[in-house]
Image (cartoon, rainbow, N blue to C red; front, side, top):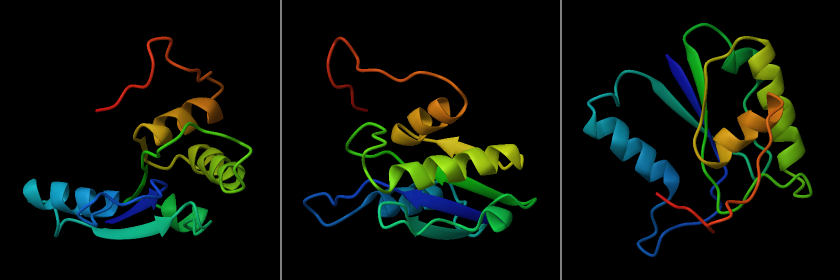
Length: 122
């Protein structure tokens, strides 16, 4: 199985770790690190997976969280939304986390807005 991680976090923690480290550690803690081939794509740099490859049977796609909301003014966001729409149309297995969930909602016709109680994390 091939799992495509589209990383859009764009930052590292003070210890130098990134969300990619978190995903790898989480999969290892679950004993899953040998169950699939994790392919990391830098979504902010526009390095997105090939839709045909990512949508094939036995593959899956995770779109990570980000430090900000889905903002179509950021140049890397529209191509990512187009990819998500294409993958959905192809029946790909998709998982959105935080930003990724918002992006999926927008692609599927939902609305995303600010939390009236302020920023929410965790």
